[in-house]
Amino acid sequence: MNFKEFLAAGKEQLSTAGIDPIDAEHLMAYALGISRMELHNPVIVEDRLAGFEDLTILEETFWKLLDDRANHEPLQYLTGVAYFRYLEIQVGPGVLVPRPESELLVQAVLDHCEKNSEKLTGVISVVDLGSGSGALALAISTENPQTRVIAVEKDPAAIEWLKKNVSRINEQVRIVEGDVVDALEGVTCDVVIANPPYVPDSQELPRDVADHEPAVALFGGPTGLDIPGRFIDTAARLLKPGGFFALEHTEDQGPALEKLLAENFRDILCHLDLTARPRYTTAVRK
Image 1 (cartoon, rainbow, N blue to C red):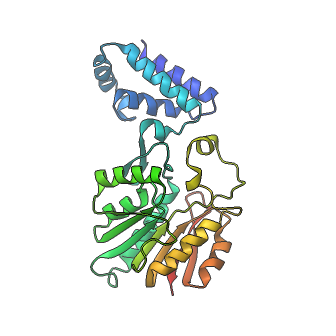
Image 2: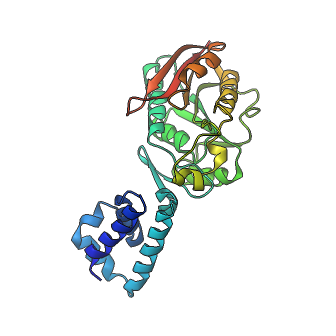
Image 3: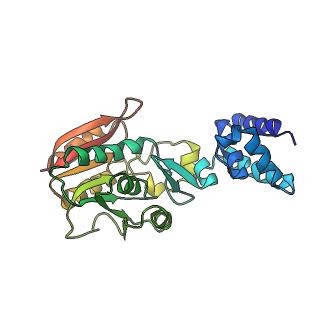
């Protein structure tokens, strides 16, 4: 087998299916058990190929992965890993793949904790509402050891992934299984972070997302604001006066969310993502 030609054929298959051909490199690296960067090191590749008694096994594995990706199964589901900030988050069917945009949400919380370090002495209590895979909770907990994070999730499939990631990355993160509406009654905290289901029910999504990722983690009602509204109510209940709230949303939901936040929050600010689109809002509890 000519390795370069084999990989090139995989790229062509994905390109024909409308998929980024670079994904073929990710899949080949996964099949070989190396990183994508190592895939470009001929010595490492030859060493890995030599470890296969029968290269047809590698070929069959690679072509199966390519077929699944060409059918728009998320790359992260196929490799089992989503890279989020400094972490490798395990993901698969039943849980939302963490997005790069959400890394900015985490950064907003970390910046708040740093800027208010004189006020936030001792343990900083953080609640991640609708935690999913645990990406937000685990990023905060590992990047700021002063935080103690509670991850709230109700979906059984997502909870399984959440437990896997917490056990692997930081067992100090506490998992609470339940709906955000009535979770943590009587608890107060310093920070709430949330990436709720906010996509309007009628909005069309890319096939990767629509066909494979869980609808319960995506859709937020006719306007997409029903579930974010519940998250806002819960944040208002949980946060201490002066507590910080960070909420992800679509690029056109900022003004509506500002109105929902106005009753219980001040210093409401809508922030842009790396493509200069409104992506998340921060606010301070009155």
